[in-house]
Length: 62
Image 1 (tube, rainbow, N blue to C red):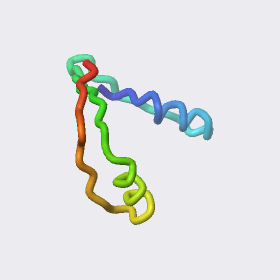
Image 2: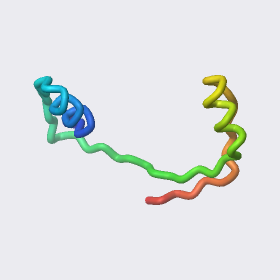
Image 3: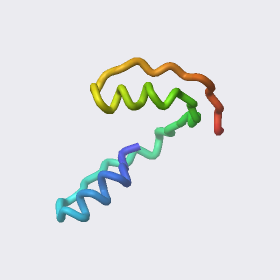
């Protein structure tokens, strides 16, 4: 924990110094999944910046 590669790349591109404090005693466990939703629910979310998205199907990748 403590190193964010996206933040590192953005700051490097902008010439901003990146400092990290890596804790080697921690482990990050991530759960990845694919979620299928109706396209119209995402269109509403884009237009109104709010909406209700319900999952039609969830597939665990890992």
